Length: 306
Image 1 (cartoon, rainbow, N blue to C red):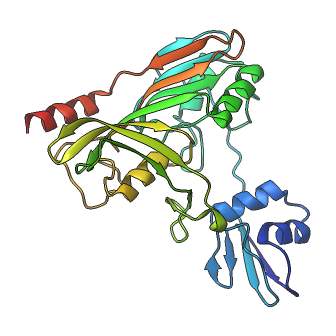
Image 2: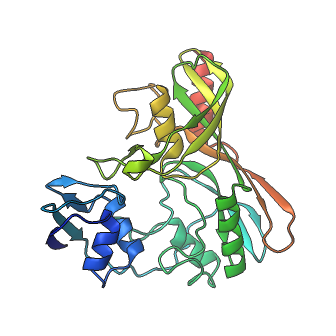
């Protein structure tokens, strides 16, 4: 970890612009990433807003984490394949499988499994995340799309950005919402105190637009099975929005602390149920439905019997 100390000499522009001028060796996007990840302190407080305006006398400490090169190794991990051709792959991801290597998870990830299945992936979409177009949290199960070519990667990313790809989830939440459906439109950003968490953060403080559509599928006493549809794809979006509604996802270790359902779950009861996207070459629509994991089937059976 390298720490850089700066003192602002005169009233100036927003934080990211100031840092990119003072530190020409760092790209603007890298600086914005460091801000978002909580590596900047402004006057001894963590600052996650790139847009904050500085004034004379402000003290900035920038921590640059040491880069840990990751050696990607192909590993023969079984894959539950829902769809595959020469352009893309759609998998049903199990709970506990991390999508790509990171500090603390150098191997045993979905990327390691993909390299064994598709040896030509390296270089598509970035060195450490070959083929990964979108991600699922470690303990979220279900459908995830992988690009096998550069054309597919660019096309699938564009579909996610344009909101033409459709991502539907099923989740069990605590409590019983009063209405049958709704839309949560609240921006999400890095938690100002805990950089491992996300939170509702105003746009002007660095949050990014996040929109979740939800509809009740089944009422189960003091629990509810909800069908979620993502309009945006922020980190932990459904988990943060559900908790903000007052109905956190059952088994969520970060956003529903203190709750217990009496069923042994591998993580949050959230499943990427259906993925609909356009084929990057043929233009045909592909729809993949991922069967529910056994843990979620067991949970629903127990709640229905109660």
